[in-house]
Length: 383
Ligand SMILES: *Cc1c(COP(=O)(O)O)cnc(C)c1O
Image 1 (cartoon, helix red, strand yellow):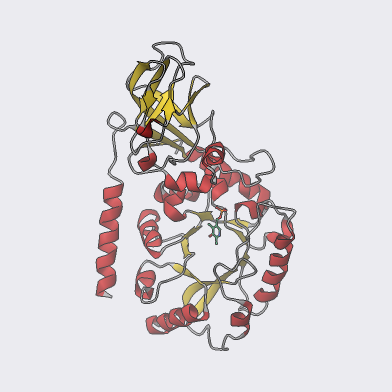
Image 2 (tube, helix red, strand yellow):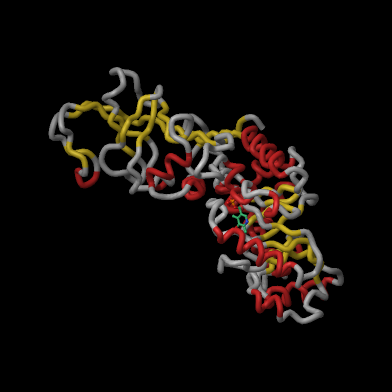
């Protein structure tokens, strides 16, 4: 118990340190997060879901955008249930949004951490019979039943009780717990025609009947677009709230949420044959104007990304390698003098969506967002 208390103090001071605001003037780059767009995306998902309840998934600090700010915006839209991945994320979120909303912890509880979860009033997503036993014991010790979500593995082989485990549960396995949700997760929800979705749906329905009667949840963002049979009682969207396209084969039904702009540190003219950046990975084929911007792989811009920045709708390709703290752009396509020290270039925004940037980096929008670093000035708008 004492160890738990110490841990929470540490987690909170660490959270404060990482939230130390960086002024707009001092920052090398500005990350603008449109909370109004997040709210609109939540409303669009709710409209799609009909009367089905809609949670907000704010794990990994709200997909990198600030769990406390995102959750507050969703609370204003009537959202009263949240999912994080870790206990520490849940405890920090509890401090930020108060006692009312239900907070579920997707990765469950590491052995021995039950008292901390009780202290922060978190609902663990129970993924095994052993976790259920530990949580049920904690409930019996606390003298009242503790809320739990039970996850079953309907075919992703990642987390949740296996079918045999569900079938083998003892009749008193739930003695100390109050099952508030039965859930599973889809492996291929972004491929609506894939037969794996239907197979998971059927398996989820079968496993549900073996568990205590409780509301059920299967949909992530893409799942919301799979249709009525997948909806059950609660959806758990994350990515779509943050503007990532949940329907990759179709136009994005969500509003963009982030804008990332980096400052120009220096501009220069270089001659034909000049080597640019580490390893001289780029050699100027002719005279060129270049700008160095204050953003690099330490800010989450992948070193392997073949990418560009944008100004006035003009594409400015990266030249040479991405450095830790800087990137060099070919700005020859802009009028001379257009870019000066301190001016901003767009990395994410109207000219380049999060999904576009992910495509250039050979990854997914989720990784672009969760990689965004701590050195930006963060500007929350339309709260
Ligand atoms: C991350 C996660 C979600 C949210 O998924 P998105 O694709 O971001 O909507 C929902 N459920 C579980 C179990 C998850 O791990």
